[in-house]
Amino acid sequence: MTAAVLALVALAGLSEAAGRVLPVVARRSRASGPLVAALMLTGTVVEAVVIVAWPAAAVAVARATGAAPGVTLGWTAATVAPLVLAAVLALPLVGPFLHATLLVAVGAAMAGRLADAAGAGWWAAAACVAVAGLGLAAAVEVVRFVVARVVATGSRRAVA
Image 1 (cartoon, rainbow, N blue to C red):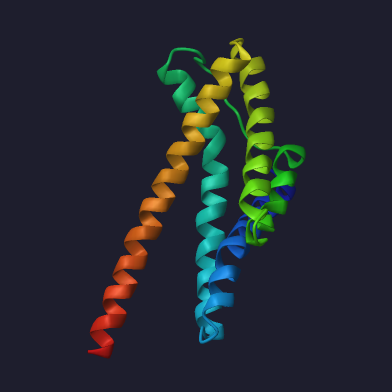
Image 2: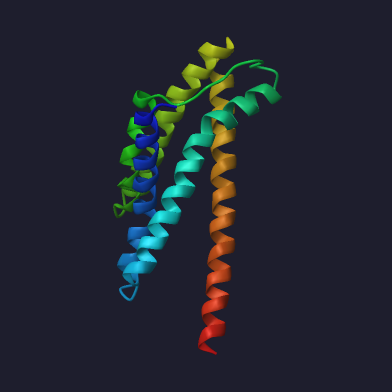
């Protein structure tokens, strides 16, 4: 990966983290600056790792189905740039819809690249990209849930 791609992935991770953290901060006016900074930094790293892993996971799913032996897929500056707009998630009412539309568009482009590289059909490649994306999203949600439970349990013990 080039430096430009890494910078865009980091910006996309920051954008995604901002889209998730800022609504929480808006609801909890008592959130301290260091806590918000820690949430943003952690969120940026996690989201950037997930973004980097998405093409590799899609190729792994394609290989598991036998559709893409020896194929590699990665991000380019042009393909990762739309993800910098992921902060739209924070918009009230329309944010989740715009975020889903953005991810579908980026996933469709990735499916086209995977189909071309593997010589498979677009629908098969799209299924691999979707399974990989949903699997990564589910894993991140499980981690978020567990961390929230641990933090909430620790907060209750500190108060009691």
